[in-house]
Length: 399
Ligand SMILES: *Cc1c(COP(=O)(O)O)cnc(C)c1O
Image (cartoon, rainbow, N blue to C red; front, top):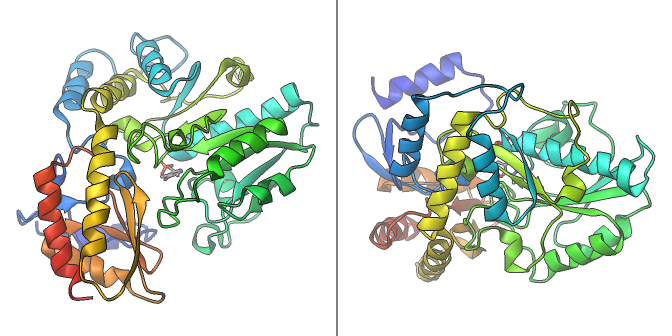
């Protein structure tokens, strides 16, 4: 079958909850993907940063193959011989005392919200049912009913009521607004260190530090959603490290699965994590042996290939090059490491640029009408990056 027929199948039998770029990917390797006709593209989305280690990384693929000969799923009714090693590695990589494995990012966020609500009652002394959690306007934390109850994006929320109560929204990048919103019932503040889906919105320097300080002073948990920004994407293992603003709970997902399967987790120190007791939270697939083997290999690749340093260096080169490209409609280039966005003038249709980029052999997707995110796998080579940049320049010159 060819591209057109694959797209027709999706349209005919799939729910229409996405509007994908018209391109079909049938194979991939590293930073490149290939369509059914054999045309090759650079992947500048990386499945929203779930493929930081590159497509089909040989070490992660080997971990999958080895584990497939042993055992894949036990549920948490029994122990398995892979989860402990994975969680130890995750705790060492993140610098936290304990980890709780789940599957999707939205589940990690739900887990963090549950931990915070329970901590609020059992440690802080808030009355159950009164717990408040402060979140930021423009956030994206996933798609469950409770998680969209934090959102103010009409697409994510419209006609999905009734929404989960207990969330207080404040403007992003304004620490003073958080402090003002805190009451005696506030148990947590949840933010993305950089808002990814909002268009790679980087808060002013000092914001994360201020949020950390305000949370400490008011005995409120600081939850960082690092699902998109984590695992070396922004040039550090985690984006909070740019300001040394260590959260109480981190939500993790995406690249933890090495681009192979959904693996998520929260990490926290024992003082918080110990609010969970047997039977109070769980997931059939969370921490399964196959996921644990993959997660361990995914972390090994990040460390051994120093992907944080690569992201930092290549990100600088990317932004410098894109800022210099002739392009009338471009207003701004922003980001950290290899999580970057080009912002075009108000009202500009970035979709058209994405289609032109596709034709030139670069896959990227707009977020909102006029912003394009550029986030290739962190394993992209200098040579590949330069080739992709010259393709991007040839497209930008026309807009
Ligand atoms: C992708 C994302 C999520 C949700 O992850 P899913 O695996 O799609 O549920 C949550 N938070 C952030 C910041 C994300 O980018």
